Length: 226
Image: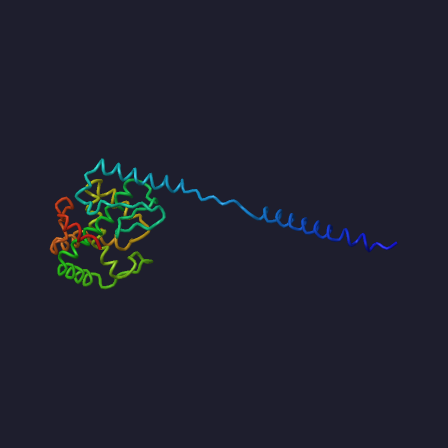
């Protein structure tokens, strides 16, 4: 018997059926490979909210205004805290002492930016004396800052940070806190070991006593912006 005519009829059907099964199998395999990805920012938002609430509490409990050279604060949970262009905090702080220290540290950058612009010759003289006193400073990995200039700068910033923070909590508490930080270890150690000598230098140059933000004009505060 000749099956030719039957093959001619059924072949397109079989081909279509095979194609359908292949596509169905492909879709099934693809669906098994796909995953559903959800971005959940709620934990990060909660962490940022915790820092916001802690800072609000600190400002209610203590009169921080004299040391607030900027009133713009940004909380970016995963960023490294920094001062400019907007004072930025992260959500890694463990407690109020750590937050107070960090917040005032960044405010001191604003204060010293004002000082450097309002008294540039004294600022240069200060750095010359710091370089003469500490001709060799360590790299960041050894307790310094990101570069030589920043290390000298932080000898002033960190001294002012400890001085300001000690107005609100005990000096021993602040010293213990900064002594346990995993960064700026040489800078903090030098600041604390040479506290009186550095304080005398900063008074001679006019960095301290610090001029309060509450005593500054709007033009003065504008100088604190980079």
